[in-house]
Image 1 (tube, rainbow, N blue to C red):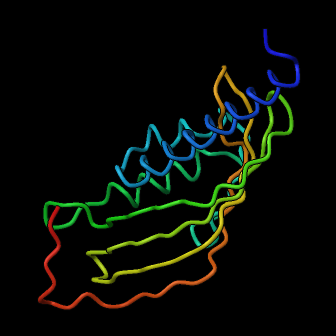
Image 2: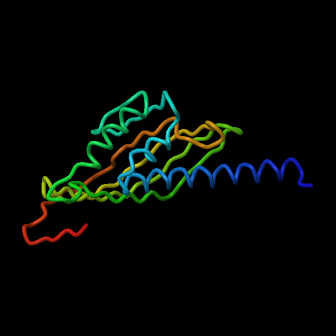
Image 3: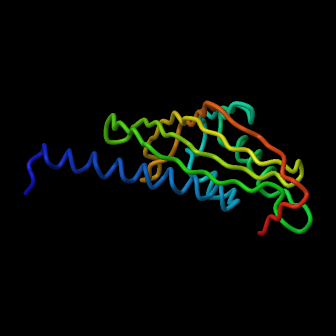
Length: 161
């Protein structure tokens, strides 16, 4: 039988891996345009969300509505906005059996076919996590953009979906 110290260390490592998997589900939901999975990554009520220009919310329902409106918009038979989220450098601290916090660096790319622009950006997520219904969920997700570049997409540029 493992000593309590080893058992606690293993539990902490398992929590960190579960939180990483949660953040990856969230990022995939963003890129896959999946509002239900996006919303499911947050606690049922009362999440603190601040995505800067996209808005600040005291519950995940508000940002989920904004996400669905942007992500599911169509133009010329395809999606109007194409996103690519790559989060890296996770710095996760487990505060107990049911609470943790984390920071992530985000590399982001977006093609907007309505505005005919491409944006590349970098920033940081500041998250808090709790166990809800037996799974880690985000209770706080704040994003701070460090910088971005937006450039026009020329008329000869082809975008395939």
